[in-house]
Amino acid sequence: MPLSLETRDLTIRFGGHVAVDHVSCAFRPGELTAIVGPNGAGKTTYFNLISGQLRPSEGSILLDGADISSLGAPLRTRAGLGRAFQLTNLFPNLTVEENVRLAVQAANGTHYDMLRPWMTRRDLIERADAILDQVALGSRRGVAATVLSHGDQRKLEVALMMALEPKIFMFDEPTAGMSIDEVPVVLNLIAQLKQDTSKIILLVEHKMDVVRS
Image (cartoon, rainbow, N blue to C red):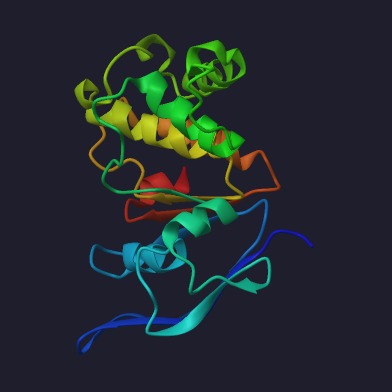
């Protein structure tokens, strides 16, 4: 069965306010879908419903035909949903390489082993380093994530998502807070991911020049 993601009548209410109102939409592999609108339109709330940060008041989310509406965010990640947030979500005191290696380990199903330190796992390290090269952070492998510029932290978060090897990439305003010089790096990364026609890419954005690019 080909990959599919669908929302049916997806709705959430906060008190008397309806933030997302009966949204039905289907997303297909090989497509990049941009969800556009001004600040406060409900774009991020819709993303939060899909990725499991929020539970819907009504409606459902279907992944490969199965209803995942009751699953929490970690189980949805394991099912193949990858999410990058408006605000970076990193391990601040670990190095850039350690952040990505942990995501590689998670995707690989590798757990901590006292008898085999992670530094002996050249396969994990090489995979992490290859991803860092892809996001132009190879030269910053040993730097703590907390000292990176905002733009580099956004690139690192994309690297973490790539390391988890999701079926579906969800980008929530990926260029927010970036300088003009940093924006093309992230847009080029998304363009590279789009070349894999087996993946679904969702992009929340309110900058129309980013969407057009």
